[in-house]
Amino acid sequence: MADLNDPVRLAELRGAVLRADADAILDACVARAAKLARSPIALVSLLVRHVQLLRAHHGLPLELAVSCATSRSNSFCQLVVLDEAPLIVDDALRDERVPKELVESYGIRAYAGVPVRAHGHVLGALCVLDVVPRRFDPRIVGALEQLALDVSGRLSALAPGDAPLASADVQERLVRVEQATRVLERALLALSPVIAAAQGAAAPAVAASRAADPARAAHVTPASLRAAVACWRDMGPVADELCEEASAIASAAQDGGASELAAEARALAWSLAEIGPLVRLAEGVLDGTLGEAAAAKGRALVLRGALDAHEAASAAVRKLRAGALSARAATAGPGSGGASGPPGTP
Image (cartoon, rainbow, N blue to C red):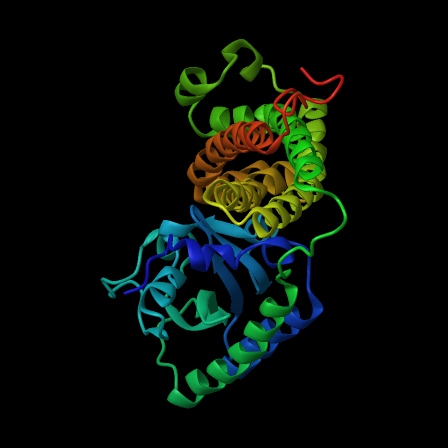
């Protein structure tokens, strides 16, 4: 049985693979899967640490199409990744293997999912779902497996390779990593209105106990939510650049500390992707795409994962900055002052 948190598997989940924007090739694959199986819903799901990200989808309820995620623990696809094999469910209501949240909330009764891979690792599943019990013909499962090859190829193409080494030396790259962590730390703090609003809507008592500023949590405004949404979108490119720099440092230094820096950068990227579903739901409410009832339904599936991911991202940023400072001190020449921050940084 595979490990869902295998760092080698998770390392393949990065960059454009985790984005929520539409991809024409993946969208065509899920539309084809739904047609082949005569099913109302088809997905390409990716299993990260806390959530199941829906990288492509067909026929989803609006709130799930907006959030593009559910909790990993709610997913049927986790069983595909665990077993690295197809999963067929004729009647989810009676099948003890599968979680029941999606059965109860969305009436999912039948499921057929096959693995999608990148470089030999199962990242998630190509699956079809139905709202009535049914048997899936073996020919349908075979066709899904063939289609999953196209999905796997596309995911492999979307995943960036290791960052090439440019002329910048390790010290310069470490300075950029440190600067990026300061930007991301401020951005994560600016996301607190989305977190506070979601906690308050789900359970006011929880929000009061966990929010850094309970008084502010009770007065979240649409303007602060819009600013937080924009802030989250701005974090993506910064995190991508940070991953490239950390990967280049690891390639150049080839020591344990540099490798740990690259691993923390990837962990940060995963966490930002896992915060995304909650942010997209907030954006849907703000722009009128979603009513509050639909948003609440979607929020219940992703809130816990987003809270954990926000905490994990904050921890990763702190570790990255500490690691960059330590590496600068270790690689700086005598009298260079390599451990001190760049001019103008606190």
